[in-house]
Length: 492
Image (tube, rainbow, N blue to C red; front, side):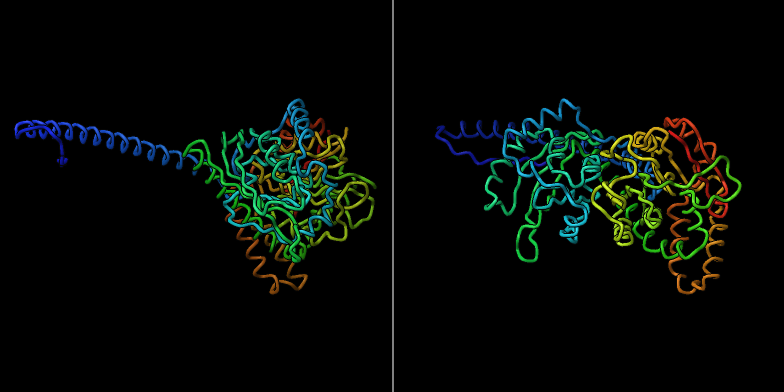
């Protein structure tokens, strides 16, 4: 250990005094250096322990992560307010001129299309988009994860619906009322701190930046809001990042899947047969019970609607169906909106399709006891907690309403299924044309989805539905989709 000598100047007389002072300084410097070295060693030891703990947490999370096609972090808890809390916060908002308090009703066709491409930046940065009336238009995966899917079910509503969930909502509302008081002199950028307690990640402190988004003429189109969250500790931050990477990987898998499977499956005979089977238009022999056609004017909840094949088929019959198509993947939702454009509407006051961005496992905001049927076509196997989803679906169904669930089963043989699809493409004369898409769909099933496909048989799925509160299994079969899928229906 090196010791430093400090040059001291003073007025003590004589060499002896200067020598005594020099010795005292050397002793003092030795003790100070020793204490500094001990402090440094303690800090290094604590850092090594923290690194060790983080590595252990890292390995644990990797082991829990499972397939990239799964539904991401387990046991995700949505954040909700009690009726008393909500009334109290609405009362506070009534007392200050908060922007967006009296926004007009959102029109999913006109208002959303006027925005155009959503200007997201870094996918790792939580962000959401508001229109010029401060209504929620869209949000990215990072925001949905960090803030517990708290915007699911609130699209088209005032951003206040989200602000009410903040710990510092009063400060946020008061500051916004002041900063946005003059509509002719709005801030180009608005910065404020937010505090949010997540049931999944604990207390999050974030700096929120809201940027004006202009249209092509330079007029205000909306607001892009980004957040820089800080989590309670390093372990929680690491857990969030791993959850986010898993979510983004899953999103990419489903988006890539969507680009190919429509062209392949809709060119086969076996997939349209499955769709018609699910809606009761064609029920092959071999099932137990009876799967009835969906009657005129029915209200239908299409959960995990994908690219909109079920929704479009139902709308095509022009039987007055009102279809809520729930889908969270951006790639699939884009295809759904494109394919179903002639049938899209922004309210449920008449027949057509309402395309709703929402996670299939988080059905917050749906009207209760208002649907005749709920359809989950090849969805349940990708849910982390299907029973929780089934319970939410049950709450949305009218008395005697019916849920219909299809999907792979323990006995599913992918090679047999793809051999059948290949035969159908050959008959249609499209084998060469669709070869790349066919290969991609098969590869994604074999590599990305294979580990989650074989979760249940018919009896086990029936028991899951009963455990979610459904009173009667009305239909079941294990021979759908060329014998490689099951269908189970149950009544509320």
